Amino acid sequence: MTETLVVHHDFTIHPDWVMPFPDDWLMRLRQISPIVDATSHLWPRYRSEAGQWELYQCIPKALLDPYRVEQLTVHWTAMPKRAQMGRQTLCSEYQHYMFRTHGVDAQRFWVLQGSAGGTPHRFTDREQSIRKLHGWPEEPPPMGVLEAAPFDERAVDAILSRDALHAAGMSLANLAEHRTGDGQRKEEAEAEQEYRKAFLAYIDKATEDQVDLAKFILKNPQITENLPQASNEDLRLYHSWKDDYLATGVIPGPGRVSTSLATPRSFQ
Image 1 (cartoon, helix red, strand yellow):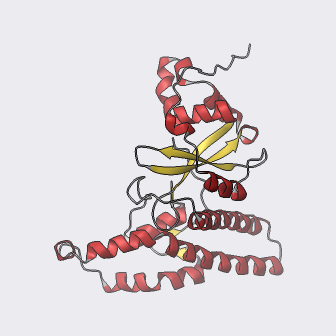
Image 2 (spheres, one colour):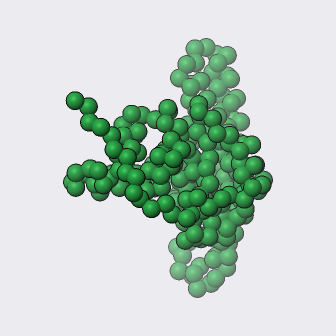
């Protein structure tokens, strides 16, 4: 006999979950991310603890793995005690709410903060490698660290650029997998070069806030006098890594990173 799936109906709806996105922002959001059954879309959620808006990537039920559907359907309170903590980790109350009311798996995606149109909830593998090379934090600025930002064209450009890079990475991976001759290999090489250039341009723009903060900190002699001196090799690497990356696709130090951008992990 198949076990009946139970949806928990009694959790309290938090006011932030239903806070209306400003009308003009919502209209622009739906222009770049319409709600359709065949693909994921973006959904706004206000976070009162930070005074900022966050965008979630919402994947329709029809595109989900059956096991993920079960996770989002059966609330932790309907499970044996030994399994409750694991279910709470995998599915937040907000995710249960979004699945019950909209039939989607809502995954954290983008925080509207900072001067570059927002910050991602998680960096991709390539972004982490480059940030490690620079000695920058390998996780995005926590929500609330940067000034709240509106959903304007800076945010639109940043999100569309990230989507385009993801699509390009996936296309290149598919092209490499199915290449059969010199013509296709040439096409792949040209596309890879354009991808690398676009990726570096995106990184430069997306890290403007962090670079400005680092420059401000390094002007403090009490901090800089305690920092280790860079070796000649470190300085050479710092000044040449972009040229090396464009030529080889290898990010020095951390090693080679796959062209395909990583899919964001599941967060609450």
